[in-house]
Amino acid sequence: MRVRIRFLGSLRPANAPGEIEMVLPVNSKMIDLIECISNDYPEVAVTLRNPARNLIMLDGIEVGNIEGSETSISNGSEVVLVPVTHGG
Amino acid sequence: MSALNCTKCHEIPSIYHRPYSGERLCPNCFKASLKERVQGAINRFGMLDHWSRIAVGVSGGKDSMTLLYLLKELEEDTHGSELIAVTVDEGIRGYRDEALGIVERACRAIGVEWRQISFHDLFGYTMDEIASWERSLGACSFCGVLRRRALNEVAKKVNADRLAIGHTLDDMAQSALLNLLRGDLGKMASLKPGGFTNPNFVRRIKPLCEVPERETTLYAYLQGFELQGTTCPYAGEAMREDARKFLGEMETRRPGTLFTTYNTALKLIPEAVTVETMKICKKCGEPSAGATCRVCQLLEDKKKG
Image (cartoon, rainbow over all chains, first blue to last red; front, side):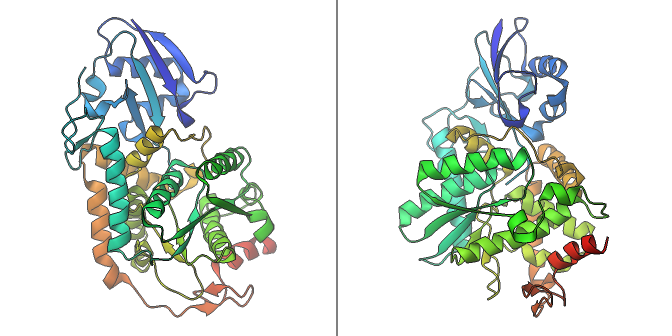
């Protein structure tokens, strides 16, 4: 299945465009997606794997409001990665 | 995938869960709840007078942008106070340049006057120059002291009677923990969200003191703010970063930790406050706790070196 990913702010990897499409196995969960992105873009892995340092929006809903990293992803979903970066 | 309905309006699907309160909120109720919380803090800590002229410290980050937008909304509701956005350009190449553009566009979009001041103009050095010095203190120690002075200077220049800064609940809890770790109970008083009245300083207020950083982030996302792509190159040097990591992990595992730390610190303030008679710095004439102010001490060390 295909998933659209948008990287915001400091979570945008240096060598990636602001938006990419990823192909994931059917029945993938958010944790699978996080690992795929972390493998492809290691510079954002630490932030992405730490739930205190990011907000992950799945089709407009923060995943903590669903099932967190165990949330299932559907074909055609949009995931937005928002950094909880320090700075006032 | 489906989300439960909002626990406030009961009609619209929620998009956000607050682990520390159990609430599930739709976008509109979430934004309204932040506004209410800021208004509540302003009232409870007596932050503003009816006709305050407020200098809002805006760095271009999500916290200060959230502060600016929420204060602007509250101002429009009450028609009492006046806002001027103020920004300190520390002179951090790449990082601050990007932020200045964000602030300029935001202020133009919402019709708020904007002023800036730079470390270079005020102190003769940029932060990049200071960071290149041989120094025993971290870059953040310099930056914090100089930025505090710069914000006060620009607030005075625009005749503000309040200086609103975007310190969030996370910042308050981190400062409380750092004061404890350093054994500096006297500094706990500076956490007071409503600030202190002192003729030498524009009163500093912290309207976001009860808003977690996760929620300024969500607000920024929902409002479509531009988010900075670069982070401060010197941020990792600060001891605060350790406190931030620790409290962040604790909040994830034990929701409510930030509020508990903050509330406990507020209870410590009355006993921690020591009344200091402010002196005048013999070098620059600015207010100081000792004979020489911290700014002059830091810059003097460089000259000696």
